[in-house]
Amino acid sequence: MAFESLSERLQSSIKKIRGQSSLTEENMDEMLREIRLALLEADVNFKVVKSFIQNVKEKALGQDVMGSLTPGQMVVKIVHDELVALLGTEVSEINFTKKPTVIMMVGLQGAGKTTTGGKIANLIRKKYKKSPLLVAADIYRPAAIDQLETLGRSLDVPVFSKGTDVKPEQIVSEAMEYAKENNHDVILIDTAGRLHIDELLMDELLHIKQIAHPDEILLVVDALTGQDIVNVASSFNEKLSITGAVLTKLDGDARGGGALSIRHITQVPIKFIGTGEKLDALDLFYPERMADRILGMGDVMSLIEKAQDVIDEKSAKKSLDRLTSGQFGLDDMLDQLKQVQKLGPISGILKMIPGMNGAIPNVNDEDAKKEMVKTEAIINSMTKEERRDPSVLNARRKLRIASGCGMQVADINRLLKKFEQSKAMMENMTRMNPMTGMMSGKPKKSAVVQPNRKKERHKKKKKR
Image (cartoon, rainbow, N blue to C red):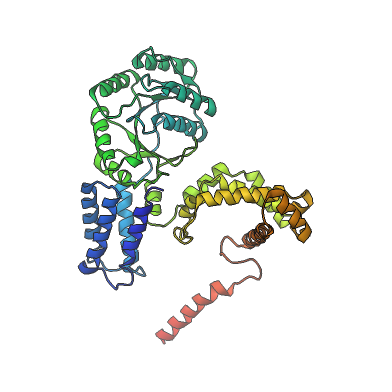
């Protein structure tokens, strides 16, 4: 995942200042040196690194440690705030004030422009309840039009195309009229890219801009590009005045420095990030949440939003009802595992949970997938009675199941142990009081009242 090595290095650097009684020039220098190296190794532009380190040092050096904060916590807060400032302070959404809203997708070839256009159309339709139209204006790249039409069919989004014999400017002009006639309130134009920036490319994009009068010009950049991402963004911004950037392939082995550089250098907000190959793997870019992730603080809000989008509420309620009525079985556990799988790779989920990033080392997503396949095979080899009530599984039944799914009896036993653990955990969660974090049972009024009374008595004695 992007930022992984940067995240580890930053957290390791900050740890070294923990336990110090105050922030001094001596104990800050070593930490800042390591942060500087971590940022440079992550492909953050050197001008950005210089400015970042200077700002952190100015804000941290000589400050008194506030209240109950330790120097380590103080530095984390300062670094976090600087990261947020670097990434853009607030989320920047698409501006839908005009109808139809025209979005022009630009970028170099291979950045994922066509796929990203499809992903944005999908998000706009689902999140904002709009009627998007995709426009195939890339007539040069082989199969670009076919790719966009295939995406349109899979997303059930219409695509306007005229083939490769018509000039892009004419295609865009006719698409504008088509959108108005067919009540499409968002137009997404997939423009041509090149392997490098040249005058022909820019001239064509400028002509399309003059015809379409786009409300948004989104530059699609590959997070794997490294420091060159800044040069690309600067060139496109200078010629076209882009309104936002979309970072793709952030799920890959990217250093992520481009994301930290692009906003600072161009003053253009990052609007979306691509987090996977699936057509729903596109998120709005939240600077504060990204800063939280980089510093190992998790990202609970994104996890909740993702869960709300993909988890079937009826199915979850059904499982909870079966649990509370004592009917929770292996079919219910399998259904829950499938629901969790929709959230994405397990390593990504753990990174969103505060304190879990690094708490469970060596999480392998491929191994997790294989384990899920094994679990499903074992459960599907059972009878309805066995799935409903695993307590009936004796040695003879386990041998039959193992033979049916090509596993060992030990695999069956491990699954049953996992089932009992997940069942117990869910039972505990259903008894948990969300206000106090305590198990429901006897009320513990004294836990809240007594400490305050003790303080009051102590104050009265002092006055006497």
